[in-house]
Structure formats: C-alpha cells, structure tokens
Length: 350
Image 1 (tube, rainbow, N blue to C red):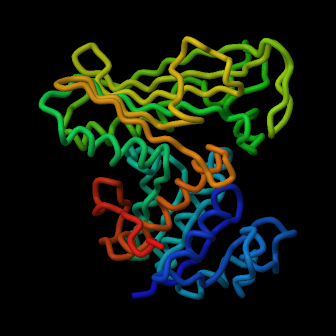
Image 2: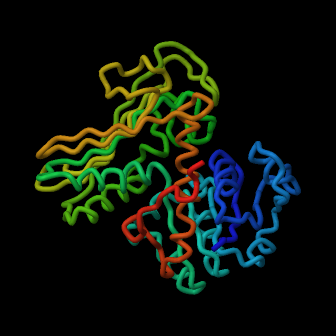
C-alpha cells in the first residue's frame, strides 16, 4: 500500500523528512506546506537540497488538507510557539489526516495538562497523532526499554545526550531558549522552574510506564559553565564569561532516590567541562542501566557530511517518516511509543 503524505515545514528537520519520504517506496509526497513567503511556489526537492520532486510548496494549508492525505509529517518549530503548534495539529487532525510530529515534545507521553484539545480533535477527525524523534524519542524510549529486557534487576535507568552543539544552526533555540551566550545570572526559558519537566518529564514517565514502575515525583537539576574566552559557533558569537556549557537532569524519584533519569550534557566546545561525561565518538546518546548486571549502551551519531548534529536531525526525521504506515493503521487517538509496534527501516535496504 502507498500512503499519501503532506510535509508541513521545510526547516532543519523538514528538509530531512522530505528526503526520507522520497526514499520510501510506500510513501507518496502529495504536498508541502511552508510559512515563509520566499519558499512559496518552489519545488520540494529544491527546498530539500535535492533534485526536483515535481511537487510545489504552498502557504495554502486548506488546499493541502483538502487533498485528504493519509498523513501529515509535521516538523514546524514548536519550542517558541507551543500553542500555535497545538492549534495547527488540532486543525490537521479535525480534517481527518493522521499526524507524525516532532513537537511539541511533551505530547510524546503527555500528562493530561495540555493534550485535551488534541485528543478531542483526533476523536472528531477519526485520526491518530504520534509525536517523537530522537530526544525525546527513540534514544529514550525503545532504546532503553529494549536494553532493560536483558536485566535481572534494575536499580536505575539513565538516558543521556552528550553532544557539542557548536554546529547546530538554530540561534533561537541556542540563544533564546537554552540561554547560551547570555550572562550566567540570566535564567533562560529552558531553565525556568518546571520547563525541563514539561519538556522531558514525559520521557521519565513513559519509561516508568514501560517498566511498570510507580514514581513518587519528578525533580530537576542543572548547572552551567562560562566561556573562557570569546569564540564563534555556527549560530553566532559566544562572548567570554557567558554560558557555553549546560548540564541538566530530569529525575524520576522512587523511595527517595533517582530511579529513572534523563540527562543532557551540552557543550559548545569540546574542552568545556572536562570532568563532565564525555561522548563516544563525536557525539552520542547513552543508556546506562544499573542493576544486575550493569549495562552501558552508546549510540554514536555521524552524518554523511561528518557532522553529528546533522545525524541527530536526520534521526528525528526518519523516526517520524518510518512510522507513517504504523500511525496511519493505528486506532484514532494520541499515540505513544508504547502503543506502536517496533518501527524499522523496512524497505530501505539498498
């Protein structure tokens, strides 16, 4: 069966989902939505940096939904426009189109606080929605859960992202949300009380559900390091003394101890935080299961261009694209990784 899909946005992730849609023989690109007037009317392949697809991008969302696609691949930025993104998703679902989306990330395993309208829209349209990626996503749902399947006893599950973000070309996220390049006394959006839990608490709760564990609560912790001198990254300038490295944890607590932990170690230079966890290769996602026995599993990232951040964007894109058939065939509603069968790269072996 061939599924007709619409790609919604052509930014950092959307460029890669377009390439991924093109690579799957069971997917047909029916249309592309763009918000930037400069992209309106351009060929989808050109926007993805590939050969022409013969599909023209448009800003007319209603015309795309009128095509009655089987699925919309939604990769529009949501971090700085959460409620606008929720409105987009509800609109798509009410039209009857299924959705795979990269955000808002808390929808990957929601806590019931903001997901009501999405569930109602899914019921109204008889459609399904699945929000996922690499993190939150595969690196901290099926990857750790699979590893726990060879444990005798589990004392702690820790999911880590250990990456240098210097080549991540997204100034709004780095400077505006994460607070890099800003004075250490400034508290950025990401580090406001409760925001880490809103974004990654879903990871902790989903792992607990997958393991059948009842948590007592979720706690946050973070620390930052200053730039020892002024230096440049792809997205801009990091001035001496401003934030240049960030380490945080979202901890699922059980009986007074951290039982399930999501940890990020983010640097803008490899020499920062030498005593912090170091990546395997140029960058990695790491799962550590403490118990009987202890396990450490490193997933190294490297794009064909030699950049680990490109690989992370590609991983998020393909996590969504490869799940399209399963999401279309799933019962209507807001799905989680625990609801879907194992998503593989079926049909992609060259």
